[in-house]
Length: 149
Image (cartoon, rainbow, N blue to C red; front, side, top):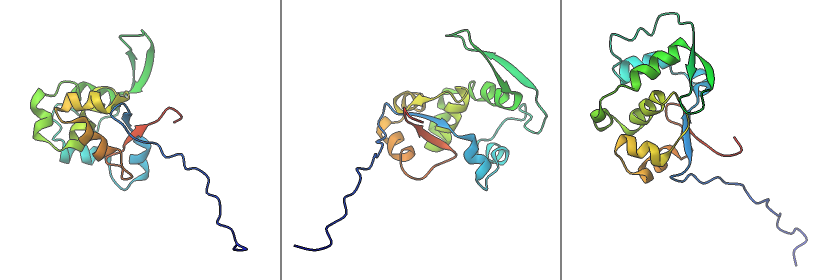
């Protein structure tokens, strides 16, 4: 028998991303990355001329229609939500999966959505959403959320 027994490994708590896993955009990711959110919005998502991203916005009160809870968001986030919540149904078919998910989450006020719900909105299979966004690489700040996050 060896005098150096094998080390015991702690069981890794690997979190599996499933179609029920919820996703949201981590805006801190944008702050830490070398990417600029406004540049991305203009160049990749063809924001309309009616959305003024350079303007200074005040705080806006939003009322949750389900709970009646009032929360404050900055005007920039509100303008994005208003714009992306009105995109045509075929938008997701005309853009990449990552861009489509990004737009859906922005249109939903970045409230966490399951991969299943996202897949329905972008007309793509949930397993493709999970495989694309549930891996180690983070695209455009879209991250899976787990119960202990």
